[in-house]
Amino acid sequence: MAKFSEFQSSEGTQAKDHFEAANTNSQSAASPAGIFSPADRRTFLQGAAATAALTAMPRWAQAYPGEFDAIRAEIEKHYDESVKRLQTWIRQPSIAAENRGMNEGCELMMQMLREAGFSGVKKMPTDGHPGVFATLDAGAPKTLGLYFMYDVKQADPAEWSSPPFEAALVDKPGLGKVIMGRGAVNQKGPEATLLAAFHALRGAGKKMPVNLVFVAEGEEEIGSPHFPQVVRTP
Image (cartoon, rainbow, N blue to C red):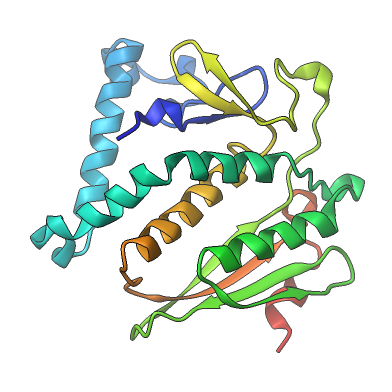
């Protein structure tokens, strides 16, 4: 499987590491940051995160680990496709504060949902920028709500070491190869990762253990002024 650093996303001239705090100077000597070197601390926190994820897994998943083999194979098979999906998304600016690319960003969000297996995908008009509604019916007894945002913050190219809407693959010391672009961390990167997981499940012939009701907005970065209109519309 590809190394984590090869899919790590990064924004701006300050590359972000998922496993390190933004300000390590304020951490006490009794914390992991005060005990370990940066490399050892990252290993420690990665191990802790993996342990937490394993603990949170359903009992059936722990009892039948082979169930994930086909899913892992799909992830490997479509790795490049998943990276390109995120790059395409980053290259579509969707900045509510500038009214820039919002309709295009909404349409792309809807397209990606359909491709990931969602149905009933529709644009939700508001007095501002539109939201998106969709469902994924797995025939499960339980249903969860899933929230996305498709807008991003503004970006001044002069403050970036790589153009913010090119989604370039660059090498960052300490991280490896990363995608550099506005939204790579907040929030298109994490959301694209979840969409990639849905693709892998479908490709492996597996079903979600829960149904999903999906809502997305395009105004999170300006305070979500019209989000109630998205979720309260019949």
